[in-house]
Image 1 (cartoon, rainbow, N blue to C red):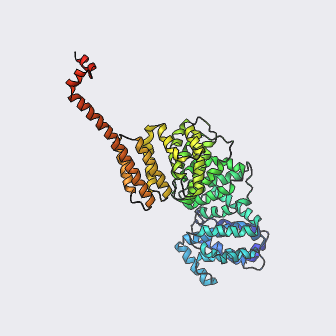
Image 2: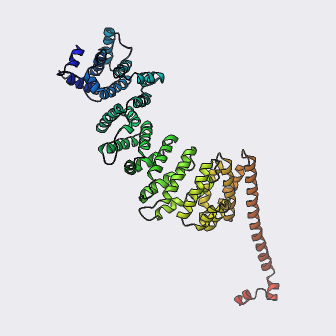
Image 3: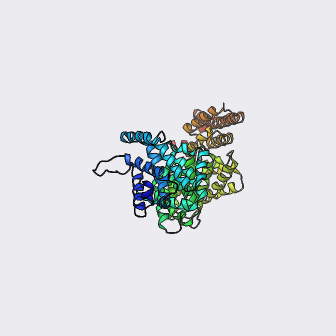
Length: 505
């Protein structure tokens, strides 16, 4: 029967379109019977019909014409039948099993139909590749379904770029008009075949892609974030797309606060590429947002994130801004000490990037003294210059330096101890701050590194000696004045306090 229907020019296309509509309807849209009843059975029934059609020796022409659409909707069916199995669907399926001797579950049957479709379209290699990589089994798990869809997209792209282009255009249309529950797997497929789309200049496709990716960046799903970022990184070499990506800055800045290192790394990399255009004028508000969020990333536990964030920071302070730079100076100034510490980083790339960025920051702030020190690579003078310029910031710098005492890197802990020693000498007389420094140094005395512990003890002794010497001088002066007061009659007679005696007269 189905062979006759699908081979008839009069009925083939209408029937195929109805099957596609039903296959794509569950569970997002209602499917009704002629008497108005609503049921989820029809989608599974349509899958059974497609399976029967694919069993005929000669594939109907309409199946070939609508192959990309069928592939997508059968993937829909695998996903939905894995997630949801209403009672009426389960009952219907048991009847199908008895009548046709079908697979044990609807989602496995949908996979079997999908395989048949690929084989009938001469894509046995794709089916075998998915078997070897256990892609079909991965497709049957709701949590890993989108990974398998991405794998399927890659395998198809190896054998047929035109087919991938057709599927990509169809997915783009679906994703632009609705937000189905299958959106994550659909995006996974689209990301793998973006190169098959024409996204040049002002074409509608480019704007559609950007709108879809923007929506996923704002979602609360990390898998969507990863896929959207991967897609954007693939498109970054397209100049027109790179320019359009500036509209995504706000969403990207929010992702920089994510705790997932991979997401943060991709986001920083993407922002670095977007900022690559040296002639682009950056809005001060955007630059300010980025600078604020990037500063904590200098100390990220992922060295790649550290490196990329420091390099992006360097780019920001080097590019022309839309307005005056004054609003940025406060935040840029806060980068001086973290960058100085990371000049001692064990990762050579991070250390080099920190030194180069520190030079750019010194130039941005017009600190010629710091610029000269960094250029001449005399970093041991940096702390002295930084504290000497504005002693009122010593307490602020102290708060910034304290966390580096707990760094897992020995060179950074050493640099922090040396900084505390220098800051302690600047804070002479400020008992509260000095007490804080001394307590911190005492805590470092038992550091896992003998060298760091010894440096902390030496620094503590030096600060205590300097403070004792200061009070010794004050005590000595106090004693001299006290003795002078007690011997006042004799001193008056000798004319030592003539001014005072004149004042008393």
